[in-house]
Each structure stands twice: as structure tokens, then as C-alpha cells.
Image (cartoon, rainbow over all chains, first blue to last red; front, side):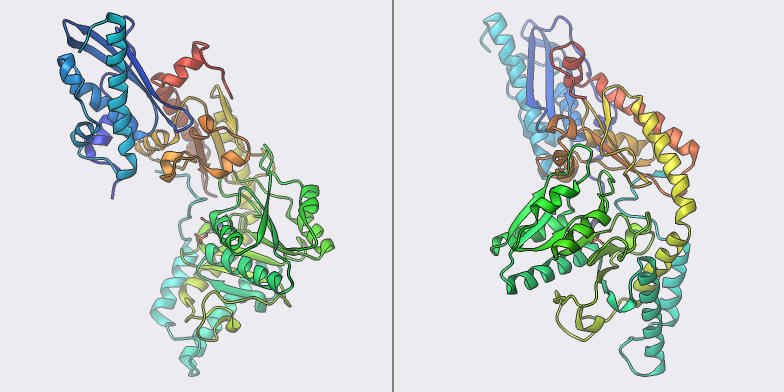
Amino acid sequence: MALYSEKVMEHFRNPRNVGVIEDANGIGEVGNAKCGDIMKMYLKIEDDIIQDVKFETFGCGSAIASSSMATELIKGKPVSEAMKLTNKAVAEALDGLPAYKMHCSVLAEEAIQSALEDYQNRTGKKI
Amino acid sequence: MIYADNAATTKMSAAAIETMTSLLNETWGNPSSLYGFGQKAKEVLESAREKVAAVIGAQPRDIIFTSGGSEADNQAILSAAALGRQKGKMHIVSSAFEHHAVLHTLKKLEKEGFEVTLLDVHEDGLIRVPEVEEAIRDDTCLVTIMYANNEIGTIQPIREIGAVCRKKNVLFHTDAVQAIGHISIDVDRDNIDMLSASGHKFHGPKGTGFLYVRKGILISNLIEGGAQERGKRAGTENVPGIAAMAAALEEVSANMERNTTHQREMRDRLIAGLKQIPHSALNGDETNRLPGNVNFCFEGIEGESLLLLLDDKGIEASSGSACTSGSLDPSHVLLAIGRVHDVAHGSLRLSIGEEITEEEVDYLIRSVTEVVEYLRSFSPIWRDLMTGKKEFIL
Ligand SMILES: Cc1ncc(COP(=O)(O)O)c(C=O)c1O
């Protein structure tokens, strides 16, 4: 039995939206090195739409796959919709995660929330 | 495929498979039966005992066959504890980086009132003999220190530790699971009272192993029942498995000199190659280590993703990262040698086999270098390190 679903492995092997956005207007970083997972999300938001999103992740296979999937789920979407992204949605889109890896999807949700909060703080816009 | 996880388990040797299958087909009697067919199995069993004993310089009657290394560790420690309790000696000395078969048994004894001193293993992964001596008290009933560590491969000064135990009149047990068949062991030369071994770490079958117990030490049973193994371990013996283990051990021991000379050379080539990766560090002493063990930490990456990408390149290896253990903490061995969590998560153990080639080693070096570089390319920690926001540890 494989550790991860095909979908997780596919996103892990070919992560979408990897890298940084130099002129991002929302950046969020969650997790810590002690626990072995850090996710950093960069958002470029224009007209309340997530025009671009990129991530950097230090972590296990499911952390990388969760970051990748989360960016896919919010790219091109209105900010209000991204705000509602849940870890469950990330895990489901990956065809599930092992129980002890669910925290990776939580981290992805939190990274996006944190980047959106940063955007709010920078722009003073309420979402 | 390059299998570089021989510390986890090894492939059975042709001799072991051949021994096992022929016994399964032909000599499947019960060694306790008195008719000739059963007695033939008994002969096979006793011949295996002789072979195994010869490898470690022991007497055949001092070998108890078990289901593996874990059982042997449990039986040795619990026996010594039972003897200690009778004399009111309820203190045990061990080390912080023992296998869980030892550490969890000690934890259980602590709950029963024993006191356990876990020695520091220092940054080089080695125990200091004077510290063993200092830790031994009047009420110490056992010192248990592994011969070689399963993660970082460091070989402990067993002979000297044994000598200290002799001098202090304390029982000495060593978990030699990773060492036996790979380096020379002699229970007399090394002053060992009890020793644990496991068949599957030297090309024998899984679920086989043995405990050596020096004559005169009263061992207690984990498994009650029939009178097998001189009454010390009940249950009809796994004759095919035991004989296959003995065949495997006999073979690796006969070829040890040749095997390990080559293996050491390959190990050192691998270490030299991986050291070229910036901000990496070898875990454990470079020379006092098993001929097949290489263990590195790479800063800025996490071990599980490293393993998965190496798997894609046809390389099987392991890591002490928390993510690979299902717990929140990285390996207790890496923490014991002073690696902080941040870098312990980025560890890689390559335990190479006897027959690895130079080309394979070079492929390992290339692949690990590539994967580490790739993972660093999108690691937020690596960015912080490179931009000076965070200081390098390695
Ligand atoms: C040092 C050490 N001790 C004990 C064991 C347990 O051996 P077994 O798997 O035969 O129970 C192992 C193997 O994982 C080991 O490496």
C-alpha cells in the first residue's frame, strides 16, 4: 500500500505555483522548523481577485502537495472565496491524506489565511 | 534500484534461502520428537547453535534462539532486572541512543521502581568509558550499551566498557544487532555477559535472532511453556529460520574481511561526495563507524520529501525526520548527539550493502546532491539562511 494517494504524489512531484512573487501584496508564513514544516504563501491581489499565488515550503511530501493544491484552489478566485478555503477542501482535493498528515492541510489553510490577513493589514481593505 | 537501507533489513543470502527451503521441504520434523525424523531436525538446530556460537567465541549451550533482536533485548534486560531486584539492586545504566527495544523495556522497569541512568553519547555518537564507570553505583544491576548504533553506525568502546563492568562486578549486556556479521565480536575478548542479535540484519530471515548468556547467569523466561532452549524460551523452534540465520551468519563472517574492506572504501567515497554539499554534516564519528553506515544532516530541507524523491530515482534509504516516524519529534538518536530539531528533520541514512559498486556510489552522490538542491530551491528556511535572516547551524 502506498503511503500517499496518486494525487498527493502527483502534486508532490510536480508542485504548481512554486516560488516567490516579488511584488506580492499579501505574504503569510506559518509553521516552524522545530516541527518540521514551514509554509510561505505569496499573493498578488488585484480588484479583489487573486491574480497570482506562489509558495515556498519546507516539509514532508504531504506538506508540499498540500501547498501546491491550496494554491491551485485559490488562484484566480475572489478574495472572499479564498478566505473560505478549509483544510478539508485541500485534503479532499488531494484524494485524502493519512490521518497523521492532516496537519499539513491545516497548515496550508493557515498559510493562506495569514497571507490574506497581511493583505488586509497592508491595504486596510476588509474582506 | 539501489537498496541503501540495509540497517533496516537485508536481503536473504542465497545460502540462507537454500538452507531454509530445503529444510521446509525435507526436514520439517519437530526437534523435540524422539523418532529419527524429529531428531534430524534437532541435529540441524544444534548445528546452527554451534555455528552461531563459534562466530562470537561463545559456547553453544550459551545461545538461546529468539524471535529476533527485540525479544533478545527484552529477555536480557528483564532477566538482569529480576536478578537485581532479588538483591535490592535496582539501578541500570544505559545510553540515550539505544534502540527502542531497550529504551522501552527500561521505561517499563522505571515504572516498576527501577532507576535508570542514560549516559550522554556526545557529539561524535560515542560513549565515554570513564562516564560509564562513574555512573555505576553499589546498587547497579546492569549496564546495557549497544555495540553499534542503528542510525548513525557509531561503534562503542565495548571491550573497555565490558572491562569496567567486570571490575565493578556488574552484568553487561550489549545489543549487537547492527554489529554482528559486520565487525568482529568476541564475547570473551569484549567482556560481554549477554548479547542480542537479529538474523535479518545480516542476510538471514526476519523473525529470527538469538541471545547469548554467559554461563552462570540465571536467565528468566519471557515465554512460558515447553522445555525448548533449555527451558528458557518455550515454543517449537523455528528450525528452518534458525538454520538459515546460522548459514547467513557463517557466510558473512567468513567473508567479513573482504566485504568490509570494500564496504569501507565505498562508505568513505560516499561520505566524501556528500560532504561537498554545502551546509551538510556527517552524523557520528567518521572512523568508529559501521562499514556500511552513512548518515548526514542537510540544512534547510526535510527528510521525508528527500526520501520520496530518492525513491523516484530508484534509491531506497531512510531518515530520522519526524514525518517518517509518525511522531512530532525527529529521531532520538540525532537529538542525543546534539542535533537541534531544525536540522535533525533533514537527515538521511544510507546503509549500503556489501556488494555496492563505485558507479552506484557515484549515482547516490549525484542523486542526493540534486534532490537536496531542488528541495532547497523552494524552501523558505533556505531562503532565510541565504539572505542572512537566519544563521546557519551547519
Ligand atoms: C540496534 C537494534 N536493536 C534491535 C533491533 C530489533 O531487532 P528485530 O527487528 O529483530 O526485533 C534492531 C532492528 O531494528 C536494531 O537495529
